[in-house]
Amino acid sequence: MSELNRLGEAHANLVVMKFGGTSLENATAILRTAEIVRGRLKRGLKPIVVVSAMAKVTDQLLAAAAAAGCGDKKGALMIAARLRNRHIETTSDLLSGELFTEVELAVRRGFDLLDDLLRGIAAVGELTPRTRDNVVSFGERLSSRMVAGAFAQHGLNAVRIDSRASIITDDHYGKAVPQEAAIEAKLTELVLPLVEAGQTPVMGGFIGATADGITTTLGRGGSDFTAALVGGGLHAGAIEIWTDVNGIMTTDPRICPDALRVKTISFEEAAELAYFGAKVLHPATILPAVQKSIPVWVLNSRNPENEGTKITAMAPPCASPFKSIAAKKRLTIIDIVASRMLMTHGYLKSVFDVFDKFHCAIDMVSTSEVSISLTVDSNERLPEICEELGKIADVKMEGHKALICMVGEDIRGHNGMAGRVFSAVKHINVRMISQGASEINMSFMIEESDVEDAVRSLHAEFFVDPDPTVFDTEVRVVAAKA
Image (cartoon, rainbow, N blue to C red; front, side, top):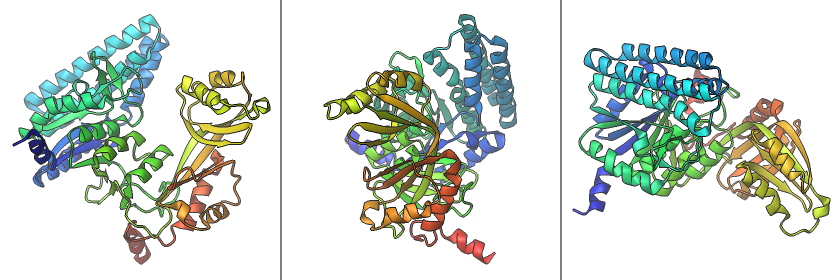
């Protein structure tokens, strides 16, 4: 049998299951994930489990690193001590006997290493991006040990894998770029044989390493990215993102309690939503799955019977113009005006070169012959960016802005759609508009304080009579009968 045929047969029933921090927040939640994985095994599937750090651990590790970087050794070690106690208590709740002894020792040794690292940072008085990655990686390094131990304690043939051995990246610390060919080779060498032997690998998400073995992280939402890289690298049959919501919704249910679950959505639509504020997925999660046409499911670990949302290469036909409304806050508008640059070749390039120099991503752009308005979501380097731009133009910034993004298939093919959208929000000042750059996205900028009002108005306009083949309308039927 050829290697290609063998891999194809092995991977059709392989499922990559990513569990986020809220799915691992305590012993009860971790045991719930064990039963979900057991259910996949009973269906004849072969799971690879990717785990985030326990809920809120990453933020606390970042706080410890920052404290140490400021020379506050005591404060940094106090945060680490609280995390140590939480992990040991959870381990005690999960495990007993030899497994408890083994995992508890690994957890204690991990925190000993973390303490030494924090002392070193405080002594030097400097926190580099490389060292920050090392500190923050402990969340996933420890959670993967605990979860693998819990699975083994409850009859699952689990084995913990250090993700840094197979998720190979460059050295752009804080947001490392995966080296997909190297990752596929390492996964095939290190992880696939375990799956074929009937074991369930448990890997930490978010973390990787350079080819030289230096710890890196993949940036915000990196655990989702890890799951997609593993799924893509091993040509899995499906990728499951387990979180604390029933899937992708028509909008944030905290703003609109009548928001509906989207049953199925395209990769392109999901990527747009993720980038423009929907927090269920990280945008990069989509890419490795798109490349290999692997379906991604968004599921709820607190309600595993719910069907969730299926993300596929092509969107199914939908009678409703929009699938979902997302909002992205904390944006800044930068107005760049240079009348002296009228008709000057290379003006736009010179502006965008500044943003490239400072590695600052741009969300939306509007241009005229001499002026450019654009939006960014990072304030980290804005003073330096504006100083650089000031050499070629007059620059003005406006903060506390938000972007409303409406996503659906073939928006440009619906007559009068812009009129309906802006009639729904006619009582709100719209600062910038983007329509036409994408067939599936209509976006506009407003004040942060107007976000909830705008979302409610738009949802009321476009989701009164949703297509039941694409949206879960049963919940409204049940609510109406109650």
